[in-house]
Image (cartoon, rainbow, N blue to C red; front, side, top):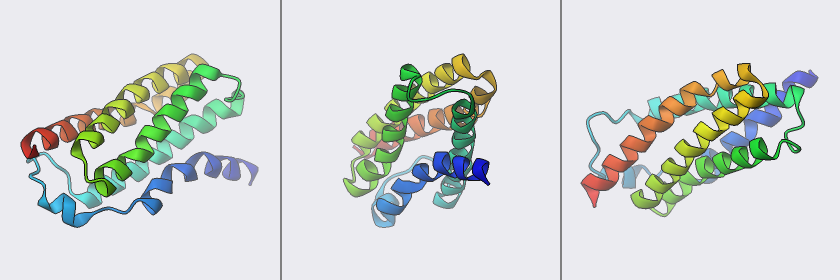
Length: 151
């Protein structure tokens, strides 16, 4: 039970932006989207899977290290978390593809650094972040193309 609670503490914060910042379907549907854009339902499903993998990675690191004392890991994790969570706000609430692209860039760069820092602490934990990096590359390219073709 303690392990489940500890995992949930790692997982639940990643869902916050989805509850606070709602998906603006009207704004999204009015954008010109590239052909390689996934449907919103598929994107939502992928993010939930990614959040589970990120939480597993954090849980594995947290199980063997005090993440508050591993300052490089902690700062990269916080940067990545904030960029990830702010994307919904800047893209859907501010309706800004430019700021969305900036958040995607920060998320991609910080996810690579998060992988490196995780690998330095717990090699096995870093493997759970590989799908996150791959999807962050996709999101980066998608947000760049959306910005270019719409503005």
